[in-house]
Length: 234
Image (cartoon, rainbow, N blue to C red):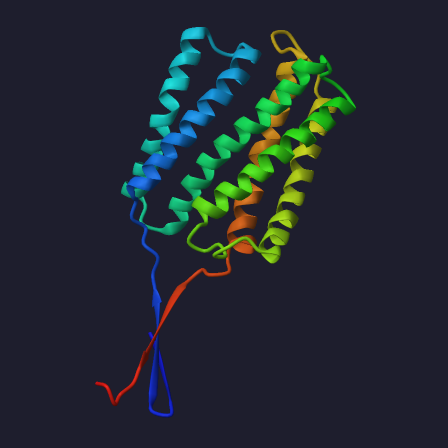
């Protein structure tokens, strides 16, 4: 708390720590993210034939509850806001990655192209879809306590700059891995494309969390409240 006085008026500025409590709203959001992610990943995993039909249904049914469990675990095991934000970011990341892989595989399925410049083009398009989803969810939920009250050009410019670097990491890593690796027994070209995309996404997630936390959503890291007290009234 800081105090200052001017012309008999005392200004008291109190820095209010942000609560780390988990609300019912967080559980509902986690559940909805789990449902949306289940639908997207069901398509992707079915296309890649990584799991049997029963296993796919089990994963799809379990994911919403796993997201809720992750929120509860973060609250029970960690007291710092950083861990809570990291869990929210990872859940949004699961949804973003689902969108990324869904669009990526839908384009491959629609065109029949799965190598060369087509992979770079498709990954670029799918990344952009995921990016816009990421911005909305992260400013509204993950970093909602520190994001600007309303969308503004500065915040979006910082977001775009961080995300652009992530774009280069994501698309560049995917392209390099696909170019360097070769399908082997049991691994088709489509599977190899998705493995490359998975590695690239992991690198991108790490970069984005650091960038969003330190550079993008930072305008109101500490909430403040100003109380103007007139000593003549007290």
